Image (cartoon, rainbow, N blue to C red; front, side, top):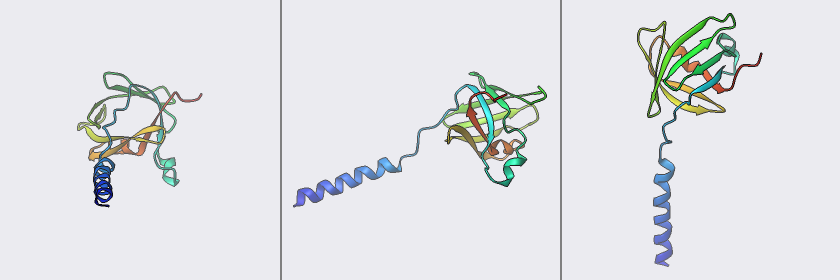
Length: 130
């Protein structure tokens, strides 16, 4: 009787830490992405970059191309699930937590900067449909 009770207690004790573990840090891989919005409500229309291509290179350089073929460039340095984002318009980098959201990657603000709107976006692997 005591053996069953001890086994049950040990099993429960071992199971708790496993469930409480935090997920491994995520890195957004280099590649082609389509910008989507994380907001599916009425505010989704306010995100003017929906459907635009976002290309992330292995060295962290990125490019966004507008429908008028204007280019925006910057850098996304990733380490241990944290991304440091810079672009040509921001003097201070944005710091974000990276996470998988649906079939794309999302960024949650860790440090507020001029690039805080970056957190409204979802980066879905693929190329835009023409």
